[in-house]
Image 1 (cartoon, rainbow, N blue to C red):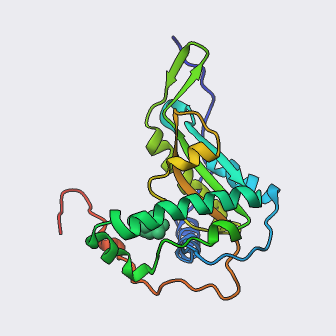
Image 2 (image 1 turned 90 degrees about the vertical axis):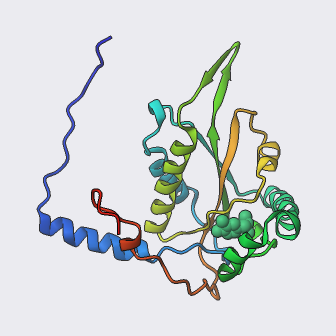
Length: 223
Ligand code: IYR
């Protein structure tokens, strides 16, 4: 079947413009850090929704947008999520995570306690939609994990550019989120992202970042 098409172009940019813009963007994105100490200062719903619109503009498998963003700002629900997440995390830190994993996390200083789940004004839970039932018919999505990852990346970038702090939190296992938030079985919790402002006395670990040179290869030239 012929596909309906529309013209597509991008503004023509000079290399000098691209370098300047790229450097500005790099400087700005390098200041993004995972925040674990939030202020309870509110964030407007309109601001959050703009960041979610950016996330929703991400590319996706077969253009299905196989994700759902559940925003939690109800204090009772946030508390319920914190209690359930901490129960899983306590079990993980005490019994499930091997010593090698605990050692990898030591420089980050995390533990089972997750007070930010109640303090941050919003918890955005991103679900990947593996399949959806429409009456008798089950529709399967394609690349739901990759798609949800792309939407998450767009969302984190948008939040940062709007001056909002985020954390990519993955309490494990995460199925309690599907139950608490009453999502159907085809929807799998993918990431829990607290959104807000850093607390006045917020700190982050003084981490060394792997240089790009260690992550980049041109053609077949292995280092
Ligand atoms: N989900 C746990 C453990 C954890 C795992 C990784 I990989 C991190 O980069 C950070 C934490 C927690 O949130 O504490």
